[in-house]
Structures are given as structure tokens and as C-alpha cells.
Image (cartoon, rainbow, N blue to C red; front, side, top):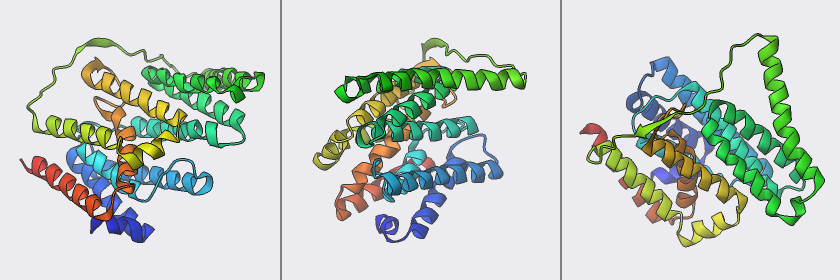
Length: 293
């Protein structure tokens, strides 16, 4: 079965995952030439490889080979839209931010993890100001008595100051014309409830969110603590950009891609082999059916 291919060898996993990702980028999402589709597919695949490397080194993210499939399946379900290079870059940064969020609990060098997390979120906020809400995550870390000291406070403040100094030094040195991209909330979007692709996406989102409450997945996610808050705020912002007219590099539903792909991988990992095969089969058939209509 397909899920077994994602358990046997890295080669088969990457090969099948790469095919699905390319199909999604080239045939479903718009404004992509063949070269663009190949480049963007390779970038997404390399990002997953980087996550697997971090997992192998730190054992903190819970990333498995099955996540190659979950990232490609989620991309197949994401409604047709432009996937920009800057959006892909920001996704990589967001995953690094999540890695450091989890490291706040599991690492001995929590000061370094807090600095890295705050630095990355500051940088992301320059391109997507709405994601500045993710600063709630490092701020929540101060509820831990171990983090309530001058070292952690300095790390948090210094990271923000450092990014501003580095960024504006580059802007000044190279005379770059930069305008801070404040988001504009204009009006509620017209949500076409009866559009097949939209209905399928809505069903997929509900399936992932409710399935993440299954016993085994739920128990694993509980252990992430601060990491859960990161995804929670991420999902909230994703729904806001989806339902409200907000200009974003991620377009309409792009911000939900990362948390859903991550959660789906966790869900599939804890499913039995038979149930996993059934779920993957249904997801692929349903998506293919809508694509052909």
C-alpha cells in the first residue's frame, strides 16, 4: 500500500512525495511554469528533508517519513492559488520558529532557543505583519518559573533589537527602498459555499482538526505544550486571512497549510496500518474526483 512506501526507504518516500508535490504545484496551483513548479517542488521537499534532519538531531518535532505524504496531501487539497517564492521562504522560517518553540521546553539552552524564536518571528513580521501575533508564543514562555529571570528577558528584547539593527543596516548600506507592509482589512470575502473545491477543503480542515483529538495523537500533542500554542495561534491567523479580505503573501488559505500538514502527519503516524491505508485512499480518490469534475 501507499503508506508502506513511506516506511520502507527514504528514496521511495521522497520519490512518491516529490511526484505528489509536483502534481499539486503544477496542475492545481496557478501561475507556475514548468521550471517554477520544479523549483518550488524541490524547495518544499528540501524543507521537509531539513525537518527530518532536525528531528534526527534533536528529537523534538515528532517529524516522521509519513510527513512527506502529509505535506503533499495537504498541498493537493489546498484550493488553487498562487504559491510565491517569498511564501515558501516564510514557511521555512515558520518551521524553524516552531522548532525553537519546542526547544524552549526540551533544550537545556532555553535562552538561545528564546533568542532564536523571537529573532525569527521579528523577521517574519516584517513581511507578514499579521504573524506578529506569534509573539504570544515567546511571551507565554515567561509563565514558566525557570524563564522568569534577567537572562531570558534580555534574550527576548535583544533578539528584536538585533534584527532591527541588522535589517536597517542592510537597507541603509544598499539604499533599499523598503515600505513596511501593513495589512489592510477591507471586507469579508464572498465565500462560495457550494463550490466543490471549497467544500472539499472545508471537509479536509475539519477532518484534520477533529482527528488531532484522537487519543494517541492528543497525548503526543499534549507533551508539546508551548508548541501547541504556536500552532493554535497559527491556525487562528490562518482562518482570519481565509475568511476576511486581508492582503497576504500566503494568499487566502496558505497560512493553514503548515499546521494542517504537520497535524495530518502526526495523525497518520498514530493510525493503524489498515486505517491509514483506508484514509489515504479516500483522501486521494476524493481529491481526484473533484479535480476531474
